[in-house]
Length: 113
Image (cartoon, rainbow, N blue to C red; front, side, top):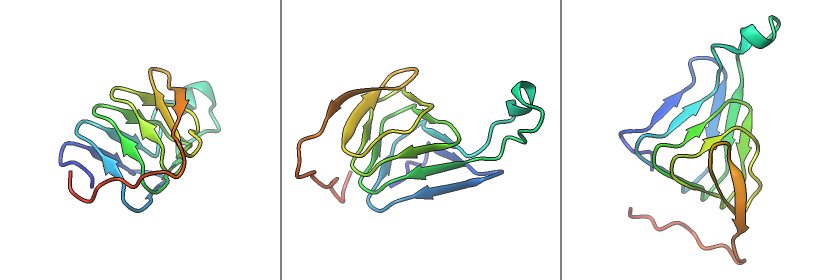
């Protein structure tokens, strides 16, 4: 489910989202960076985001370009995801950091939210 209040911005680049994910209200998922050329003139800002399956992204989080979020990851509310997140972890913060690992076997997000 992608909340009506979420923004998936792929003006340039690519975004892939796995099965059974929940992207909540106020989230931004960005496949580009309009200011990238300021740091590197050769960087046109195009990028990608890969969200695995069974991922939860909490309210008002921002997922930056060139990031992969692994399967079964939980992203806490208000996070800025500016680096790759491995599968099966809880991560949160600005910038994001890993807080804990989820116990295996991983549970599946419910179909109704």
